[in-house]
Image (tube, rainbow, N blue to C red):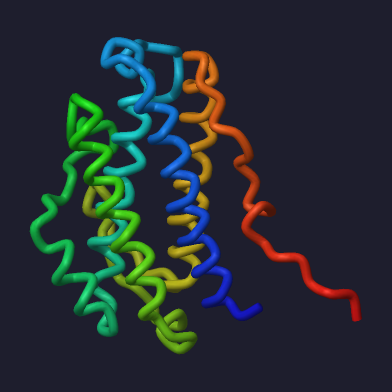
Length: 180
């Protein structure tokens, strides 16, 4: 499997898992979503907001790639978050809408990339403005790993609230192959 095919798999996994998380979270009251459950981002809502915040930050960075004009255009109306714990929304419905939009953009962006695009070195500034230059593909790996990390936290918080999101393994999306 090519590196690009792996990223396409990760984009599918991202959307699949977010659908599962948001379906479970949608069963809870506003109070249950906002309750401090002792997570790194204390509540389910705060954790889901953080994932969206980080996705916007990284998508804005990724959009600076010369091959990503379409991504740059479709996210141009999104404000760059100012803090990693920023609450983009303090209620579930608009956050859920944003999540669907972001997942669509992520899938479209990854589908439009080519293997040579992954070799680009991306120059960007972190949240404190410290400059960095890193391989695009490595940053994409971080992007998808970050989502998975915090979705794991969200699934634990949802479990504490009595919601089981079911199977979460990437393995569920990897097709069996015939033995040689």
